[in-house]
Length: 242
Image 1: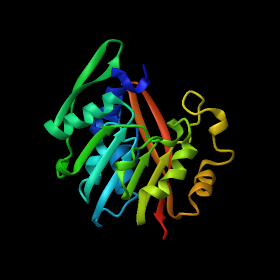
Image 2: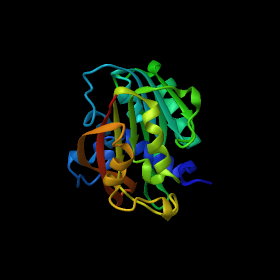
Image 3: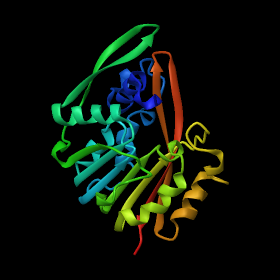
Image 4: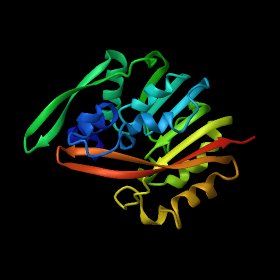
């Protein structure tokens, strides 16, 4: 079974996407800039005052970024490889919330509720299980593509980068974030970037996209009350040229 189909990962990612600052960081160790990554990857990289027609969230996980995109995009398609993640995201979209547990220690858990963000537009969102490397032809083109911490979890990320131009309308915005964690469990070594990840992305995209901005985006994932995963995603924003 994939790690991302396990209950423990589902709980961790529901907390990562929807948990309050105190729930994610119970000892209040980290600054606010480390929290709410799934929201910040949208709001800090896109002009949310500009309305768009269609948005695609590749590797949408449990869906928080889709709800943020729905505030200014009229149609949002969220795709993830995990059945569990998509089921949870759809439950939140339809029912408004889903219950989950956060491991404290041993066999002790706290029970929380992941709630749909206030002001989001669930009627604009559709979630589906899918493979970012084998997207259906019917999917069409988009004005926004958001791919957060996805590339280094793909078996052949180069294949996705080469597909992106055909998925995006002229003038559209592409957001890619990655912690650049290249491990053979997900990506065979021969498919890793040969140099820096940003240079490799640029080489693949430079013929069809113009780099608009880059920034480092810290994030934390709580494994249990006394253990955190701390990462710094490299974010790059690209504009589709003509």
